Length: 90
Image (tube, rainbow, N blue to C red; front, side):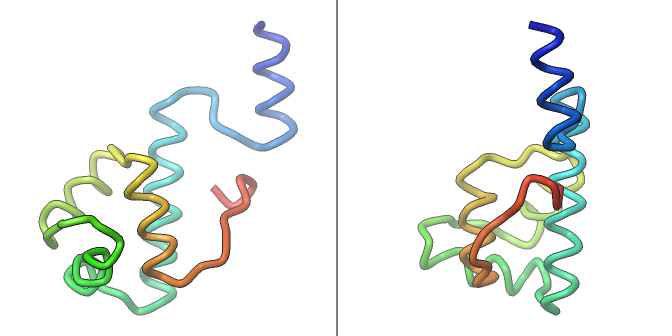
């Protein structure tokens, strides 16, 4: 199992731990928000049509803690009108 995990990490560039992956995902989202010129307040508004009720503070907390649910990640990608996410980009 360890060999498979190492192969997976080497092939996809994924993190070695859950915390590391969470941190990478948070950094990725922060960078994409900055690139798009979208504030946390604006993101909160854009998430509503995707079924998420967030506030500027809740988004800030999620990204600073790295506690990002898959639903939040996917809704954020949709709110930013991104067509996809490559795991290598994390």
